[in-house]
Length: 79
Image (cartoon, rainbow, N blue to C red):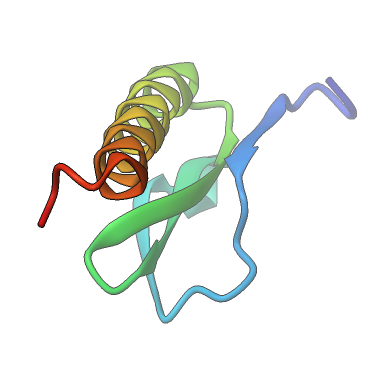
């Protein structure tokens, strides 16, 4: 918390090709969602803890799904 505002970040914005903004920028309560293609890669939230937690869950689920696909490919079962 700085200047009475809480900034939370998850993932990364590096390499994004699309960004969506939710919330109210005038009220300093908004989130920036960063995407590469259709995949969420990061979020920056200012005074929007609900957005931050939802994005973290989605990022974790997508990371687990990618890891599972990579395990299948390495095992040769995905052919």
